[in-house]
Image (cartoon, rainbow, N blue to C red; front, side):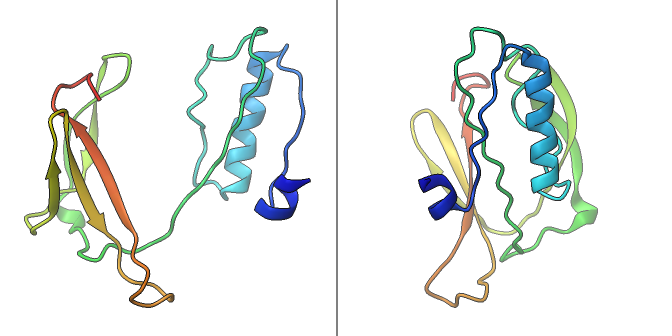
Length: 138
């Protein structure tokens, strides 16, 4: 099977007639396979039902160091808006260092580079964060 041979992954088959049980099982899988780094997938309660035909899930985490590290003492709480339009207060990393920002008509993009790893200077990774100009318009 291509999934197992190339991606070193498995593709379990399960009926989704017990949607909540399936959702809980997927969350347990993510927590186990990421060694506890991802405890809950984005599959929320009620998002699966007996009409759901297929769910493809992947859990990925990246362990890297920022090229310009954040000072933990500058972490501040601020408002974060969820997709259901509710708001939660959450910690935000902040700094005053120059960052790469790209502006487009509908959003701005912040690029945060990671330090070069063992692969040398030819490969560089960055986290790109997209900020919509309007709160619910990305």
